[in-house]
Length: 368
Ligand code: OSB
Ligand code: MG
Image 1 (tube, rainbow, N blue to C red):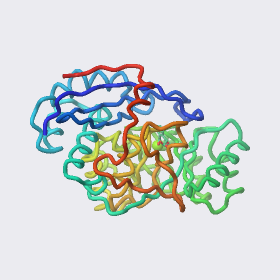
Image 2 (cartoon, rainbow, N blue to C red):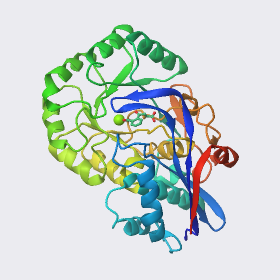
Image 3 (cartoon, helix red, strand yellow):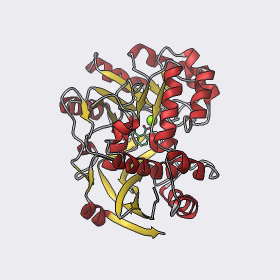
């Protein structure tokens, strides 16, 4: 299969509500999309890089530059037998997994469509619906937090994740547990703590959290291993796992008991699959994280979450939790029991609303 040319686009989209984490507030999202042209047909992919280098060193701007300057010239016009061929051509570029991932995922969706299979089936998925949850940002007050959680539970979400940071942790989680003693609850710190905070974080143990996500710095597997020794709550790694090698090291060190896989963070589906297998062999579950994606990235996440070791609900919420209007048709909706149906159409499984994408586009360029 040959990629004839690729269009890069940046959209401007506003989240229905601002989303606050320990690294900042976000309301306007600028999703970077790629559109691969193969034999006159279009295949879309989404890059999860943020506007600034907070969650990762990658940004919309760096991803655009790495795609245009290095990744696209390496693959456009070449005969690519499979994803291995693509990964081999990307290998000389160090890091920049978010830039690589959007191409890898769009290319994989194209392969799935040509094989006349839904993406999930093509990847080896084993279910027709995936368990989902919702990620709730840091709120101004405890009352607002409880109210927001109540609204999400009423919508049907069955697993609640709340963002925490120093000053918004033990008391906030305690208030949630007082109001909702039985819900499936977890917390995500996005790297906001240090190993010296171990005794403080151990106060979370009494709240029976499903897990504590990424308490310490992204690069720090060693301190996560030390922290896990002092906590009963299972540690889950997100930012720390950029590759299969990271996953292997994390397991060897005992740095976590759960892994959050975001295909957009690790370079795509193939690397996600390798991390999935390493975790399965090590006896630890994985789940699919989210990066406030549009329906394009969401379709990829849903497909990936059908693999067997995705044994915990993902941050794969419905389109209307993020956007007034999603750019795919049909949009993603929450099913009974807090699940999401896996699209059954070939390839990506949802149609991209090109007219809407055109209206939201703030930057575009064709690379040949
Ligand atoms: O750490 O999981 C995270 C959003 C942006 C960046 C990082 C994270 C998140 C989320 C939201 O938690 C998940 C989602 O609903 O897409
Ligand atoms: Mg996270």
